[in-house]
Each structure stands twice: as structure tokens, then as C-alpha cells.
Length: 68
Length: 472
Image 1 (tube, each protein chain N blue to C red):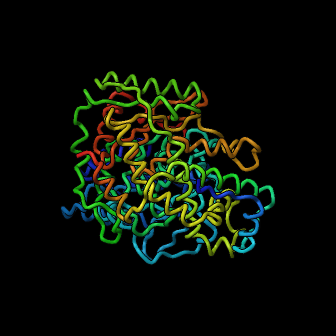
Image 2: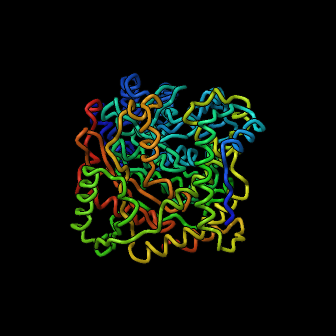
Image 3: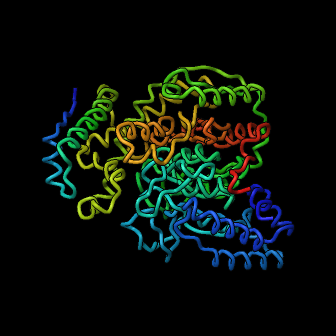
């Protein structure tokens, strides 16, 4: 699996580099869990698919699947 | 007289002006009087431009007297979410950061409505930067629901929902990136269309998530929505993502019979969090479609958690790209709820964003194969719960609040990722006296069919004709 595992330390390190408002430790933990949920869902659904979509792929698919 | 004028539909009012049974000045005056009366209660406007609107109405009447008709909206007052740009004018986007922003270009969608003769009554209040489903706004004040001002007006097109439901204007523009037209439509008892991505130009409006933002109208009737949508839709060289396909005459097609069409009802996901009284209203709306001769088919839909997660990935990445500078330099000028929605995008790896985009066509194809090979249109709940109060959805409400707010977009968020059209329709009231609604979804570019079903439904129900007490 290609899972990226976030934890609060990684979030806080990136937050310090980014600037702006630095999240609390509790918020950093929450953010890490949220990101892991999203990324794991993506990895699970896309891991076996050969993806090399062109930029226009979505627009073309909408047209192709349209009710005509 | 004010109530009589403003309770008519947009189509009826446009015809009355065109046939000189009413003047545009009479209509705009009525709208301004009601707007001034209700603004202290609803806070739906950021900019109310009564004097300018009346001057435009006088021009419209003079043109009509000369036999000049600008279009299908001649002399009709509309008001729009305060993120549709007019060159040289303020557009706050509901924010503190852009409170003094003067636009340098015109929104194509708005321009098309103005070219069709509509009168611009003002910019409507909204969730900050179109982010948030409740209508809380610390900078411009919370927006209130005309059915009960203690309750949310929905979001992010909160002011549009409130102003149209309060019968101040006949319709207005919202924008929808995850439910921001459909949620305020549901909670205010309105019709709202999230169109197919690419049907309506996004040129000249605030960008939130450039691959998922859509432009659409909130109205009281389906026929009104069909008219506004037809005027705005179609290719725009200023937005190359718009489709070149010909726009059908949605109004002309409204009367097309729905008998024999197959209406899908999902067995999984969409009813997972619904409350019993909202579910009962859904069943009653399905009975109406059965009476109209439609075949009701229960079916399994793909796991909608997946496109919902994908839409969150795309949203946070694209929103942070827009807001990066302000998040670094002016983080305290955002509401906490808004800044926290963008925050995950700061940490998201770029390859995950691009892969989520790559998955769009794959998941769209899968959804259409599984759903629309078995039915013509899918029927789902709009909001899964009775419309909550402003207090219950405020940051001060405590632990359950974030989940409650997240649940507001349970049925809507995935469609912006999939790109398919969705039409919100009112279908009754829950015991707290607030509206409930359902949602119709179709294949890409099947707005004509969604309008047909919605119009047929409104032909034998009267939910859309009921008026909040404050507007009677």
C-alpha cells in the first residue's frame, strides 16, 4: 500500500514551516487523523488502477455519459 | 398589494411586466420595501441597492413603452450571492479580507441575467468565502431563516435562500461546491439547481475549488429555475471548461410527460442518517411520483463515502491554493470554522490531490453504470434532519456540533466531485415548522429531465406556494 501516515509531529513541523496560525497539539492530532482517513480512502480505491488521465478526461467523460 | 406582487412567481411577474399589467417600478418598489422591512430580522443583504434598482426599473419601463424588450427577465428584480463580480463594484465574498475588494471584471452568468433585462437589487450575505453550510458569519452577521429566524438559512448561499424564501426577490444566484445551493434550498423551502459541471460559466466569480465550483439559481418554482438556467447556460470563451453543447429550451420541455420513467431510490448510504419524520416526507414525495405514473425502483448505489472523501481532498487542496497567502499573513481574519476547513490542504501531498482528480472520471463512470443503467433519475433526501437552529450549529454548541454540521452535506457533497446535476425540491415541513426537501440527480447534462420531474411534482403539490408568515 502507498499509505502516507500523518501524525501530530509531522503536522506541527509542516505548520511551522508554512507559517500563519500554528495548530495546538490536539488540533494537530485531529488534522493528522483526518488526513489519514482521506488519503487511505484514496489509496484503497486507486491503488490498482493505472491512472494517466489527461487534463480533459473529466470533461470528456461528462460529455460521453450525457443523456442524449 | 406588496404581498400580491411579490408572492407571484418569477415567470408570472415577467409576463405581467411584459404585458404592462405591472410596471417594473411597482415591482422593484415592492421588493425594496420588503427588503428594508425584513433586513433587520433576516440580515440577508450585504449590499441593498434600492435607489440604483429603482433607477434601472424606470429605464426598463421606458424601454418597454418604446416597444423594446431586453429579454425574458425584463424589469424583474433579482439579488445574488455577493461573489458575482461587476467591474468597478464591491464584492465582499462574505469576508473581512475582501470587504473592500473592487472587481475588475464582470461575471458572465450575472451579465447574461442583466442582458435578459433583470434588475440588480443587491449583493446577498453568504458564508465567508462560500465555506460553510449554516449561514453563520462573524464578519457580516448571521443570516436567518424566514420560516423561523432562530434557525439556519443554510449555506453557503445563505442570503439567497433567505431572500428568495422571504419573497423579497423572485430568485437569485448561489454557488455550489459541495451543497451550497441545495442546502439553503432545502432549509428555506426552495428549488435549487446544482448544474452539470461545465453547463454554466464560472468566469468572474470568486473561486473556491476551481474543479468543483458550479453556478446556479435558487427560486420558488421549477419553471422559474428553468428560465434562469437557460439564460445563463452555454459555452463561454472566457471559461474554457464550459461545454459547447447546445442548451435545450428547458421551459419548452417542462410539460414533457414523466409517466413511464424510472425513478431510482437508493437502498444504501443516502438514508443512513435520516430522521424518521424527514424519511416520512421522502416517502410521501415518492408516492406523488408513483401517482404521476413513474416506476419506483430500489437500487444499490456505489459507496458514496468514497467520492465524498475524494471531494474533500480536492476541496482542501484547491482552497489552500487560493488562500495560502492570507492563511500565512492574516489567519485571524478568518472565522475559525472557515480556516479549519482549509487547514488540511496545507499538509496534503500534491500527488494525492492529482490522484484524486484522476479518479473523478473513473468514479463518475462507475456511478453512472451502477445507477443510471437501472433508472432515469435518482431520488434522495435533501437534508437528512429537520433544519437545526443557529444555536445548535454554532461553535459554542459543543461536542456534537461538528458532526451535525458535517451531516448537513451528507447527500450533496459527492455530486460536485462527480459533476452530475442535482435539483433540490421542497416536499413539506417537519414538526418544528421548517421546510424539508428531496434531491433529484441525473446523468450529466440531464437538467431538462430533472426540471420535468420537478415541474410535474409541483403541478400536483403546493409546498412551493406556501409563504413564511413574515412575508404574508
